[in-house]
Amino acid sequence: MIKIAPSLLSADFSRIAEQVATVERGGADYLHLDVMDGRFVPNITWGPKIIADLRKLSPLAFDAHLMIVEPERYVEDFRKAGADVITVHWEATVHAQRLLAHIRSLGAKAGLALNPATPVSFVEDVIEDLDLLLVMSVNPGFGGQSFLPVALKKIREARALIDARNPNCELEVDGGIGRANIAEVVEAGACVIVMGSSIFGTADPGAEVGAMRKLAGSAR
Image (tube, rainbow, N blue to C red; front, side):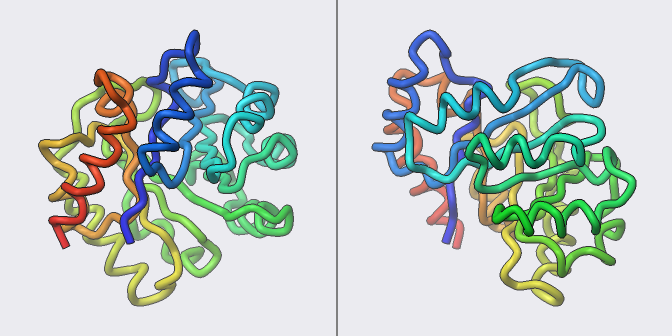
């Protein structure tokens, strides 16, 4: 089953309740929340307080993507704020396995993200500890970037590893995905598709969620 995860990074926060309701009615599966600290990535977004406020607006699963240094210091705060999936970067934590186990102990699903320059082979020793593997198809930090074609090879490698070692792990892809390439991303093996400007940059984000799901479904 393909899941669509609109990224609130691209939403209009002056109308955030309306925007959340629109994509929820359109059939979104997750709400993707990009947490940036201005250190791990060159941008700053929001912390647990904003996520806790957003939690009041929707019953959808909150998919918190922590693009921050020392994520182990903050995962409990994000879980308390209402994050259902907490994804940290392999590049940002020294003890990945320990942190993934801690996230699971908090009752959240544990995810691990890989930057474009990080090989899939780096997660081989923790693949069984993952509920979600996130392949970045842009360099993290800003929305609206173009998809890096080399990511397709990486998605295929990740799909092969997941199928062989942990079939229950979801394979998520984030960055530069829209109508023109969602089918090939799904064909490569992704099952959770994160999209920001390609959804919230349209006149009707809810309708766009449905359109993206149809395009994704046609690829399988």
